[in-house]
Image (cartoon, rainbow, N blue to C red):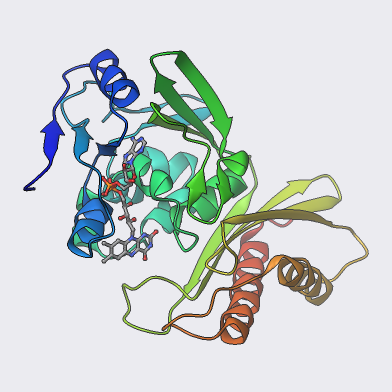
Length: 283
Ligand SMILES: Cc1cc2nc3c(=O)[nH]c(=O)nc-3n(C[C@H](O)[C@H](O)[C@H](O)COP(=O)(O)OP(=O)(O)OC[C@H]3O[C@@H](n4cnc5c(N)ncnc54)[C@H](O)[C@@H]3O)c2cc1C
């Protein structure tokens, strides 16, 4: 990059000091979004803090309860890694549908959520799975539930001087089944017009339905409701579509009008709910 300074800290302490001291510094991870925004003249930052040399940020560790994903773990690893596929298959499915393999090889898990686009695929699964984002700055560390992380259109809870170090993803509950549906109107590896991640979690007679919606509102949306024993599958689908519909506020663009995106949002929810329910273990 010309006309800018790229800093390459060797430690988290050095990185957070730079981010705290410099007014217009940006974290540089995979660079997939930054490079495009620079080419489009949308980024005026003079300092980039490339975190690629900091050890530990590429680690992916699994316990019996959760997965901790370093901020530099590529999207492609989230799609393919056997631990992710075993512990959080819904996340592996959503990460595996973001953009195309070339982007997924370079783009990072931290950069993905920091980018904060309302159409991102992985966050729909992360809100459903109740992930936690770990942040660091010179003031110390803090954790933010992903359900509170996306605060407004293209805005997150990351404050000046902070960077994302990791995301913790709880293991999918025993017996739960998930499904991710992404609907597009342009090329097959394009941004979605609408997407829905659904997790059906059995709890006695009740099935809790958790819904994460992408591209149909200014931020990723999280919703939940219960299917009670008196409801058949069609009533469950109708309830999911109703609750999703009330939260939709799509932004019209080259991919479709607001009405078209809301329609695709309802279709995505229906498809993901039906597929999740079909996979639930029967007594
Ligand atoms: C052609 C194209 C198509 C795409 N299609 C899709 C799609 O269909 N679905 C989808 O989900 N995504 C899509 N994306 C978005 C892609 O997922 C993001 O570009 C990518 O995840 C960003 O990660 P990165 O590591 O490259 O971030 P970078 O480009 O390095 O950074 C992006 C932003 O995040 C900040 N940042 C990066 N890392 C951190 C960190 N650790 N802490 C704090 N801030 C940080 C940067 O300062 C910058 O503001 C597409 C992107 C492109 C270029």
